[in-house]
Length: 236
Ligand code: ATP
Image 1 (spheres, helix red, strand yellow):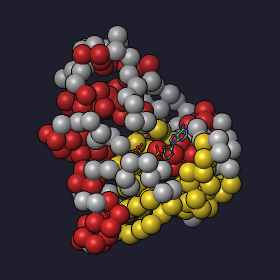
Image 2 (cartoon, helix red, strand yellow; image 1 turned 180 degrees about the vertical axis):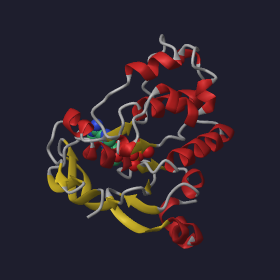
Image 3 (cartoon, rainbow, N blue to C red; image 1 turned 135 degrees about the horizontal axis):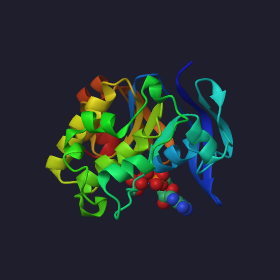
């Protein structure tokens, strides 16, 4: 039994059929990357997991417990932390205040109880900004703060939707280092991305989505060395 399992999920927006018989699994402690072009269905997959786009059929389990059809707040309380594409911070609060207001005590955090101090240890750059108004942070700093705020909910599984999007190359490198540090805490992650380079060091396994179905799955090592697959599915 994997930590997260998705079996045969079909998802729709109204009459538009978006996900087709989608299945994937994430093991405990793994970082799995969901790759695919714009509109492939990456965001919809993450939204199905957190209950924002409930699957019309299929099954999603977390540690073997069915979560399909549960309200998003109940799924969050089971330990799923979701970092959406659009960054969620309070611009008129400081970095430290942003973390404190995001604190939740229900998750088990994969054994870690996150506090602002613990976040600052992991992300020293954020520590140096702790008194700064969040609205004055750069895009990359805001992304880091958004991730840090989600950690304050003590998730056992972190879902990240295109964390590198819109960030300058140097900032993307920095974010990759921070996420690698987070991985080393043992946190399980599912990362939707278009930037293969960004996740190539971080990810253990890869799924490639195309038109709402899984077209390829394999280890990151296999994927990185397989130029044909990359070219066929991602145009990189
Ligand atoms: P992106 O990088 O653009 O976010 P993605 O792989 O995350 O791409 P999704 O956002 O899941 O893709 O979109 C999958 C499909 O669903 C696309 O064809 C998109 O146009 C469509 N779609 C997304 N949101 C809605 C919506 N609210 N209503 C109708 N169709 C939608």
